[in-house]
Each structure stands twice: as C-alpha cells, then as structure tokens.
Length: 333
Image (cartoon, rainbow, N blue to C red; front, side, top):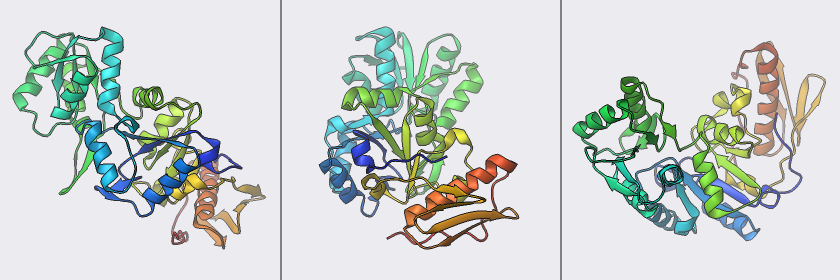
C-alpha cells in the first residue's frame, strides 16, 4: 500500500532521481509546471538528477535540452544508461579496455569519456556494448550477433521495447536486444531501468543519502526503485493512467502517487481504512460488485491516493482489477 510522509517529499528526501519523458517533458516539450516545481524542490534543498534509459543522446545534449525548457540542469546532473553501461564495463575490464560499440555516436562518446576504447564490430575487443542507434547497419548487427554467440561479453544499455518518435511509438533498443538474445542464447547485462546499474550510477555521480525515484512508468521507474529498496513517486503526466495504476501488482506499486511534480512539494498522507472504505482529505473510496467509486471532495492528489489504495485492496483480495466505469479522476489544478 501507499507510504506516508508527514513532510513534503523535497524535505524528506535529499535526492530526486527524475525520469525525463513523461515526467519533465513529453515528446520534447515541457510538462506544464514542471520547471517551476523542480526549481521549488531545489530551493528547498533537494538535489535533482535527470536519468534516462535513452543511450543515444550524450549528457551534454540532454542538459542543453532541459535548459531550453526552463529547467536548470548541469551536465553533471544528467545520468544516462550509456554511462551506466560504461561503468559496468570499466568495473569489470578496467580503463583502456577495447569495447565494440553497437549504437549511436552518443554511446561511443560516453564510452570514450569513461576511459574505454570504442572499436568496430570486427576489431579485437574484450566486450560489446549495445544501445539505441537508428543508423546502425544490419551488417554490424550480424557481426555483433556472431561474436556474442561465440562468447564475447555483452552489456546492453537498456531493454526498452518502445521509443517515442515524431511519427509515433516505434521499436526501441529492447527489440534489438530480444533479437540478439534469441539468436545467441545469451542474456546481456542490462544497465538501464529497471535494473540497478543506472540507479547506482546516479547516486555515485550526484550524491544523496536518501534518494527518491520519480517516474511515470510502473515497469521501469517504479519496479527499478523497488528492486533496490528505494522509495518512489509515480506522477501521472506520462504513460500510466488510472487503468494501469489500479491493476498494478505489488512489485510495481509506488510509495507515493501525485498528479504531477507538484507532489514533490507536498506531504503525502496515506489513506486510512474504515470498514470497507478508504478515506483521505474528503474523499471516500469503496468497491461494490467489483466497481470502484470515489465520492466526496478534496484535492486531485488525494483522489488518486484513495483510488489506488481502494483498488489495490480489492485486487489483493479477489485477484481481479476493479471495474472503472464509475470512477472519473478530478481535473488537476
């Protein structure tokens, strides 16, 4: 069930590890209010780290984009799955190791910055690292697949199945990972969320003794936090809506829920349970004949918390998600 914080999250935690697409921006455009909410959290003493599974863009490019959107970000505040993958390789093989890079120029740039020597698909190397790269040639993928099958250690920046583009949701690096896995029978070390290398690398680079993961995806952001014992805030500006939230199994449930990044600036009381109802801040939730209803009045954030707690209790009891035909979230703001 949901956690409780009597303090605003920006005071209860000293580091926010922020996913980007769906949290700070959507398709490259700023989420309304995101810049102001993040500035207020930083003013309250919270460190901000911007983390992404996208291995194609180097940190300098990500930081520049954030500043263009009005979000203050230094290069040192950005941590990518490519950097996490490079850290895995340096820890295992040491600086100066020759590594095949199968991905974008951004992946090669990060690998070089970590002290490794990027080489081509046919060159001598101690390992291979793969990442999203729309210009990667099929001949290079073929050569890499054979080398992985023949025993070359493999690190994948991430395994995301999809990536948002200007022309719609397209296949992500995870599709290539699945193809290479099927051909070679080899499981790569995955650096990006929900695996732990990216989150570990973020804390190592940015610091923080009490980090909070902030994301919009249950299966990467929230699951990744839970795997390594971190608290998490789910914001509802991205891919997760009411249907996904109420059907979430325990392993992908967030500690806190908020409509947007203003949730960093607020305390987070958890709903209380009274008989068959959950209640918080003027809202009361119950399930009758499998149908969720939330009645009353209050803040949008409290509505979502009551809805989540009520629906999860029903899911855990009967094994089926609630019917949402009678549940309509209030408008934010």
